[in-house]
Length: 255
Length: 266
Image (cartoon, rainbow over all chains, first blue to last red; front, side):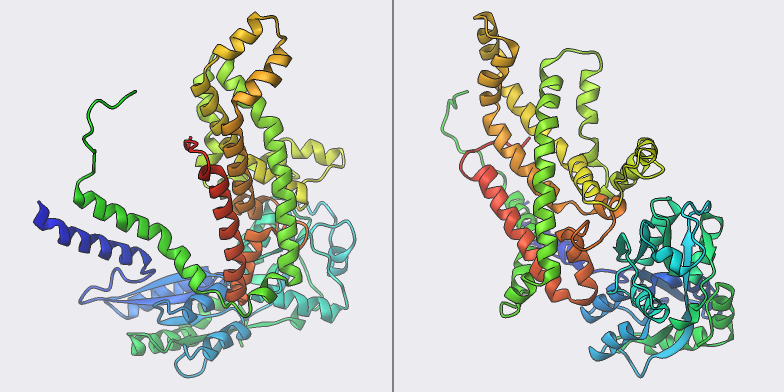
């Protein structure tokens, strides 16, 4: 029994480091390749579908997604997370990955998104414009300026000459949407694609000048990818006809 | 309970080795956190207006939540421990529920109850009382998650102290109120200290229920943990610095609660 001790200790140590390893270590067995794509939260549905189509065209390849706020993803990539492709919801966030020399080549724009004003389905505060949403007494929820949808919100408000007085600045667009669908907030600013995906759970208010704050989504293969060619192929696939079609169907604009 | 023979009881060596590894797994992240702090930037990071607002808000709400917990928790612990009623053991288990469910579930439950369209919140809304997006919502979330800590600590003390002293006081003609104030409350002393400190620590660390239920606005609902979460998006060093504050407070709390007296964990 005592002879098994070092082995046991070593196994535990391995298990420990394994715990700390993070995403995408499992599944990379001989024969198939796992491509790990870090994608902005707003891309979740579109990329899921693009990934499936890519797998059909590339037998033996499995595409896995880590979907979160762009800033969090950029942070994880800078910290050395094992990712092959990064698709961000805005250019400044991608630039942070570029500055850290984490990107291979230069990022390429593949989609655009604008903001939409949403209210609960019954629109309790009678919101009909951004001006209404900015009025006193209206519980408006937006993204914090630190995240891409919040940066777009600031641009939109500046263009309209409005000082927004939100009751909450959330860390992600999904948190904003949650506060609106649950009826806690009178209105929220989310991406047009999120508003479309939410369907009847929200009432969308047309924004006069939504085009004043356009987020451009860049995509890039990552420098430390172990499957560089495949990563480049995925980027081409997103930029190509199949990717464009899925993105358009989900409400994204062309760059 | 006296020990009859002086044979030291030790775990097998293999288990000790694994145990040490377990300890390392617990402490290593904190060591890394301290190592990751840029000492030159630390003072500036900790005194930014955002950080100070978050710190002040966290202190205010956590202290308020602790006070509310004491007002509600002492009677609740007494009722659960000293009153005989049907379903008591079920009630004692249910008190633990907020401690066991994931905080985000707690936040959703709070929204369903006190949100604008919630069970109670709907009526409050009709009366013009809004809880969501206010500091009151933060306190409510903190009370919800930390009250069980206090109740469990107090109940444990009440259980071990027994009822003999109170029975004596009552039999000598002391009123129930006087018995509570002069006998029961002092008996609860050690549990009260440990429980209060743990309650405060849990309130200070509350994140999931707050971000789900209360929102996130500087100075109103963005407590220290929420500030850490947001800073992480753009300034990881600031997030590390603020995390250090929370770890320091946690260390102080542990020392206060378990350092001097050997109060048993519930």
